[in-house]
Length: 102
Image (cartoon, rainbow, N blue to C red):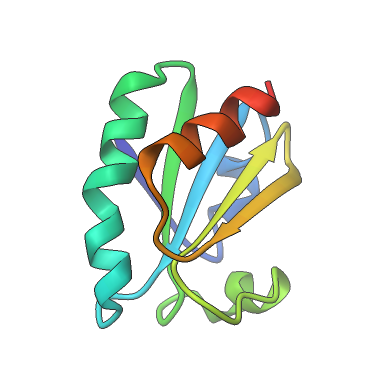
């Protein structure tokens, strides 16, 4: 299940464990196409939190992480940003990123 992240909840929600964050916007076609892929990742990898952050509604967090292109998928481990993938990618890329950073 995905957690909706906001400027106010972001730090707390990414503070512990592995958290995959999908930076997206509703007008972004690749973001919409990526949604089901990220849901599949979440259902296959049980010990990770999946978060979605709408960059239009949460500009502070998007700016803090210098999000210039979406979709941007960032992986956090215990509150620290460890890796980023930009653009629409196959599910295997996200699974490999998670596995590499366990």
